[in-house]
Amino acid sequence: MASSTQYCLFFSISTLLLLFFNASPVLAQQSFRPKALVIPVSKDASTLQYTTHITQRTPLVPINLVLDLGGQFLWVDCEQNYVSSTYRPARCRSAQCSLARASVCGDCFSSPKPGCNNNTCGLTPDNTVTGTATGGELAYDVVSVPSTNGFNPGRNVSVSQFLFTCAPTFLLEGLAAGVSGMAGLGRTRISLPSQFASAFSFDRKFAICLSSSVSSNGVVFFGDGPYVVLPNVDVSESLIYTPLFINPVSTASAFSQGEASSEYFIKVNSIKVNEKPVAVNTTLLSIDRDGVGGTKISTVNPYTVLEASIFKAVTEAFISESKSMNITRVSSVGPFEVCFSRDNVLSTRVGPAVPSIDLVLQNESTFWRVFGANSMVQVNDDVLCLAVVNGGESPRTSIVIGGYQLENNLLQFDLATSRLGFSSSLLFRQTTCSNFNFTSTN
Ligand SMILES: *[C@@H]1O[C@H](CO)[C@@H](O)[C@H](O)[C@H]1NC(C)=O
Ligand SMILES: *[C@@H]1O[C@H](CO)[C@@H](O)[C@H](O)[C@H]1NC(C)=O
Ligand SMILES: *[C@@H]1O[C@H](CO)[C@@H](O)[C@H](O)[C@H]1NC(C)=O
Ligand SMILES: *[C@@H]1O[C@H](CO)[C@@H](O)[C@H](O)[C@H]1NC(C)=O
Ligand SMILES: *[C@@H]1O[C@H](CO)[C@@H](O)[C@H](O)[C@H]1NC(C)=O
Ligand SMILES: *[C@@H]1O[C@H](CO)[C@@H](O)[C@H](O)[C@H]1NC(C)=O
Image (cartoon, rainbow, N blue to C red; front, side):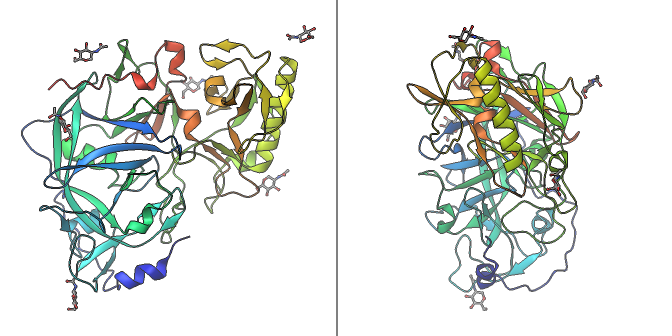
């Protein structure tokens, strides 16, 4: 949980009064205007977190970050090894504080350094893996990333005043080795997609394509398609669209009243296994006025998490359908409850031939079908397990679609029209998310 007491050690609330400025505080280099940007994503073998890297500071240094689809902003450990001649804290009542909705202002009672300055506004960097948040100074510095024409990375472009929040080193606990923070792609005005779109005046769209392999990179695109992967497949084409929903109550580890969630929610209306409806309590599928329920997409959960009664209904249907396909259930292998012998399980292009799971969306003909490659984890030579975990009774969100279910699917988030486009398994199109050609053409 959040440590608001910790926050008070660093910040004293001096004023909640804000002045608003019109100037865009996010300044980009002017000479070349990219249409889109591209960064690699890898899967960390020990934590199953997805990590990315960008370059930041002056001189530029590469920094590794855990990718957080619903995260509010970029946060970075400023306590260790932060050296930069272009670091600037956001002064109280500045345009930066107002853009970031950082209304808490304060001083730091130590010697000045990145993360510790007087008269600055602060936010609450959130380690969404462990659910720990703390107070941190809002700041800006140079960030540089490769542009792209959709086919390859091109020249690097930089944003000279990229807003982020400083965090103490302890906030990194629980994150993959070698990372120095988290890259939030969520629904805020200062998330990475928002700042890049505003700096380069491109569409407020971005796409993620996570690789299933720990040895080859997936990709995140900022801006619109084409998104081309080898052998010359534009995966931004023929997407299925579904509306994105805003959860009016923040799902962050610490937040103030009235704050909406920065995470991406969709509306699952029903669930089918092998095209047969599964009876679930539909109340759980809606977001109620307290922000409880509904379905979100998360890259910090390695596997899909289902509320207990939904878990029971879906796994029972899956077990029964598997039985009729002559697939034999075997003992569980943690963290999974439902496992099967590999005997009698055929292989297909989209993974082991097991019952399909459909998340039915705005109408019966719009569904997200999960095939074996995204539903089954091979835990050893003989055993496959259903890659879904039990979220217990009364979780905050009823369905959390986790990283494993997103792998080798392209997901495009359009913030302007508030819709999600998804490709279904790219394995059908004989390609994968690790097929972007990262050879630079500059
Ligand atoms: C902030 O101001 C206080 C009081 O003037 C001073 O003691 C402290 O050193 C200053 N902190 C920084 C980081 O400049
Ligand atoms: C872009 O920056 C990265 C990291 O600093 C560097 O490795 C790469 O060579 C640069 N690419 C170009 C095209 O300058
Ligand atoms: C369905 O879920 C809601 C919300 O948790 C609960 O209040 C209600 O009692 C449930 N209905 C049934 C039939 O279990
Ligand atoms: C399942 O196995 C039984 C016995 O081995 C066989 O008779 C039956 O045809 C099989 N069914 C399917 C669907 O493969
Ligand atoms: C289902 O939704 C899709 C996308 O919103 C729409 O194009 C389609 O016409 C709808 N189909 C039916 C049968 O309503
Ligand atoms: C990757 O892109 C580079 C630069 O355009 C090109 O030379 C190379 O042939 C591409 N690789 C493949 C496998 O197409």
